[in-house]
Amino acid sequence: MNISSVSSTTTTQASTSSSDASSLESQEASLKAQLSQVNASKDSEDIKNSKTQVIEAKIQQIEAQIQQKQAIKTGQASTEQLKPSTDNNKKSSKSDTDNIIDVFA
Image 1: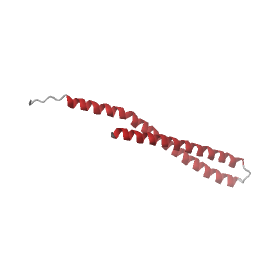
Image 2: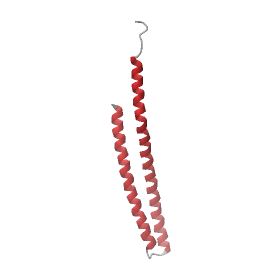
Image 3: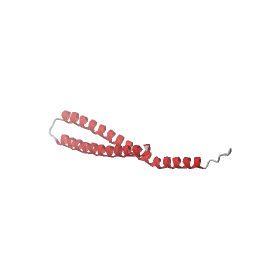
Image 4: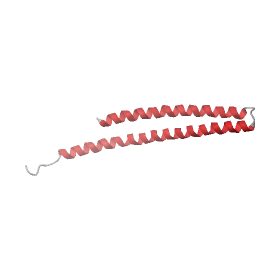
C-alpha cells in the first residue's frame, strides 16, 4: 500500500515540475523579448548596459531553475524505474518464506 501512495505523490510532483518548467520557459522567452526591446531602444549606452545586465541576470536565474526542475523530473523518472524491481524483490522474498521446511516436524 505504501508503494501506491508514493507513486501517486511522485506522479503529482512530476506533473507539477513539468508545469513549473513550462511557466519558467515562458518567463525566459518574455525576458528575451524585453532584452531585444532594450537593445533596439534609443536609450543611452549606459542605460542599455544596466538594463541588459539586469535582464540577463534574471534569464540566468530562470535557466538555472529550469535545469533544476528538469533534474528533479529526471530523478523521479529514475526512481520510478526502480520501483518495479523493488516489487519483484518483495515477491521473491515472500515466496522464499513459503518454501521453508520445518526440520523439527
